Every structure is written in C-alpha cells, then in structure tokens.
Amino acid sequence: MSRMVHFIPTTSRASAADVANLFVTYVWKLHGLPSKTISDRGPQFNSTFLKQLYKRLDIKPSLSTAFRPQTDGLAERLNQVVEIYLRHYVAYKQDDWVGILPMAEFAYNNSVNASTNQTPFFACYGFHPRFSIGQQADESVPHADKRADQLKLRMEELQASVTLANEKIKHYYDLKHRLPEDIKVGDKVWLDARNIKTEGPVAKLSAKRIGPYRVLKKEGTHAFKLELPHTLKVHPVFHTSLISLKKEDPFGREPPQPPAEVTPDGEEEYEVEKILDSRKRRNQVQYLVHWKGYGPESNTWEPLEHLDTAMGAVRKFHRNNPKALRHPDLEEGVVSRANRTRRHN
Image (tube, rainbow, N blue to C red; front, side, top):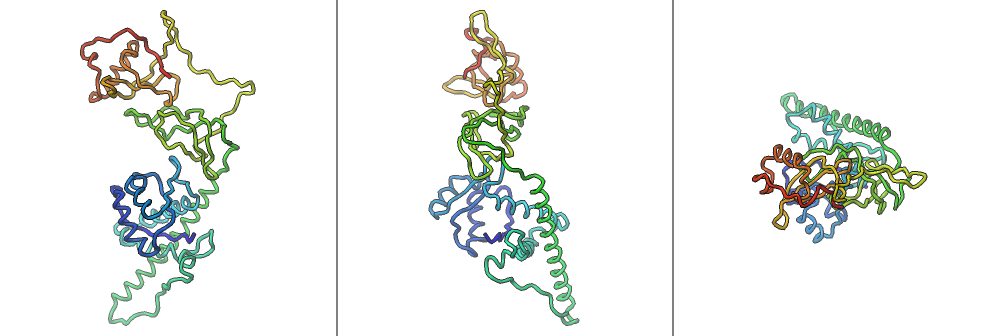
C-alpha cells in the first residue's frame, strides 16, 4: 500500500449516492477502480445502493467490526493519523479549512511514512513532486512575493503537523495496543455493553458487560464472531478490546441467575425491573420487558395479561413516554388476571 490519502470535503448528511459521486470526482479519475474498499458501517457505506453499485463494478467492500474501525489495521492507523493531523492544523486555521485541504493532502503525501520509509507520492509514482520557493520575485510585484512566502510557511506548518500526528499516534498505539487473550472458537466470552443499545427509548444500559456468549469464529487477528441472541440487533463481530474470556469454574458450576418466585398456582414468576417500549403485533399490544437481574439479551416482548403484577412499571413507562402505544385496557383500568407476570424464554 502506498498510504496515499485524498482529503475530500463533505457533510454528515451525504447520502450513498453522494459518496459515489465524490469517489468518481476525486479518486477514480486518478487511480481507476479499486478491487477492494475498507470503511466503517455508516449508512452511506452499508446501503443497498452502494452494495449493488460495487457488485456491478466488481469491487469487494469490507466493513469494520462492530464499534471498532479495525477491519484493517493499516486503515485504522492511517485514519487516526489523518484525524489528528487535520484537527491540529484546522484548530489553528478554522476560517479556511476547506481551502487548505489541497495543501494538507500534498504535505501528507509528500512526507515519509514510518512504516514504508518512503513518501506516498514516491510509493505511488516513483518520484517526489517538486515544491520549492526560489529567488525573490520582482520588487514591483510585492503581492507575488507575499503569496510565495505564505505558501512556504503553510507547507512548513503542515509538514510539522504530519510529524506531530505520527508521534501522537505511535504513543497512543504503544500505550493502548494489546495482544488478544487466548480466546478460541467455542469459548464463552463477556461482551462490553457500552455500545449496545436496547430496542426501547433509553440511551444507555446500566450493565457494564453482557453474556457470556459462545465464540463462533475468529475474524482476522483481533476480532471474533459471537453467537448472539436475536434480541441484540448488532453486527456479531467484535474487536478483542470489547470482549473478555469467561473464567470457568473449576467444578463446572455456572453463576446463579436470580431465582423466580413460585406463585400459589405453582407457576414461576419473575420480577419486572423496567418497561422499555411498546408495539402492536397481530392486533395485540405488547411491552418490551427488562427482567430484574438479567442482561438486555433476555429482554422479551410480553402481552399486558402477563404483566398484571407489574402495572406500576407499565404506568411509569407511559408517564415517561406519553406518545407510546398504549393498551386499550389501561384506559378503562381493566387488566385480565388470567396469567401471572412471567418470563418467557
């Protein structure tokens, strides 16, 4: 890889079609079509439109693992260097950041890369594009001298920013990078829950980790595919920094789950901690239940008849979410007691 970059101004509102047009305008005309692309899982890159376009153009897309832009280590490190590089310089020149992108791109591609020991320009073209400020121009045209001096100063600032960015990212990499634990296919692991969202309106979960989940496959050198329950609607491949090996009990014992209470009718009854959402399925209103003592992977959709001992939680949900779908019986104050509150697996 040459490590060559192209800095393209755009907005967060860019669609998949916009991204395709930017690629044609700024990249394709210089390098032709790639055989493979690496990107995060943003909607622009994971859209049906772009998938079909890539298929027609015989391009293989590669998307990053969940919550970690490290499908490819080189791409991840390059992205971090570029981000630090631009942030450092743009923070000083905030009024014209779009205008300095061409020079920023030139300075980066004309700086020696620590991994390849050559500049991206030389790796790609076999020579270094010339950039030098020669003798002073005619004194009768002072604006030309001023412009040349500005270009020289700006290029020196940009090259210094590249050096600073590389030093910072090396320090970060050495500090944070760690080898994965001895995790194998079939092992059970805990999953960091910071990035996992529920189906309900809450923004974050209180649980710090969830699981354990069985490892299905190793992806690359630092990621694993996990066997997740269908209630967790996330990509099942995670970087090793987000998982930890479950320590097995020497006697093969599993940590106990919260026990269920037994009703006089002999049925098991579980405690509802919180109602997260409501929906309508087959003409029936259901509530998404978070069971006390269980992780979000155990959340279930339950009809109101199963929640007659948890009406306080149901009413609290509707007070906090007045626009949420409401069971008609709640308006009348009538709830069937045919079934007790129970957890369905």
